Image (cartoon, rainbow, N blue to C red; front, side):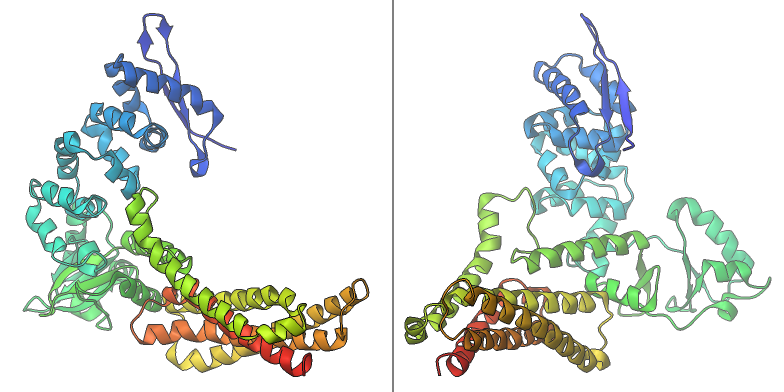
Length: 481
């Protein structure tokens, strides 16, 4: 295993104290760093060697500093962070996840954060402000030099294109020549850093086309942008949800997505970096929703926030489980006649839940990635039906064989009838659950509801109820009849 390390040796009265941090892969604690942590904790606690420690951390890689801060107690991390000058604080903060930025924040560090944010580009400052509590973010924003740009972004919703877009881009009139356009891009390279697409404007400043950088460099000399631009472009509005922006970029294979206002004027662009971040955020949010947890949950949430984010889902599951229990109770006579049926209820409910979750996960992934086309829905459902029937048939045959084999060891009344009843119920339950799991996310998406909410508690509870009904129906028909 390869590792990176940062090291230096602040001196004390008893000789040098070597401090070398070994990069922790995937944030897994390394035993080699424990001595370093103990030394830094002691130095922060006693307040000794402050200047030496600061000089040491300046030599460390920002990621190493970030890993070390996270391993300290919060009080010590805040104190040590206050000692750091703006550099490397800016790089350290950039390496921190938003929740850790908020944890380090307290009243005494506001002035330091203002200096850090003021040194960043407006889009980077806006993104970093999103990681702070609203009241602190507002106070910091009011003291920044690019307040107008940041205020413009802040006017849009958190998950909108207007909040995440970059306001730096290259846009030239369609009468501009290719040579002049290349020269302009070179002049703007330092300010914009990465340019993938040149945007073309008409005489009134409205977006009328775009030119990829590669195509621009291969264009003949003397040609105008109007001759080489592509007018077949798609733009979004600042109010467009970031998930829709990502879906559009994937469908059209766009590296950057232009953002236009109502008048058709270009106001920004969603960069590849932002598209990657959106994909990660949406995947994380969908995973939480599918697990029955609020998509806004964070590892540093307070007890009340954890309760508020999870209790509704737990109560929804409680309601579903209560309904399922009521259904089971309504078949009390059947259970009294054949108590062995109770042993197969967990099998049926578990298979129903698993089949439903598998089908719904595939449907949610297809909707999120934009690969689920409206004209393809019928074919997808037929394919899910076919797969569910095959899976259910295989599971049913295995369950029937196990039931008959068990009858050779323990006494079971009418084992072949029991095997038929349980296997038929398993086949039906698996098929129904898969169809419910595949259909509900699509239906919710059509209604404008996040399809990830269809999984977890909702799918499991509905399939539990259907599974119990089907199970006792089959038991009544083939075993108790």
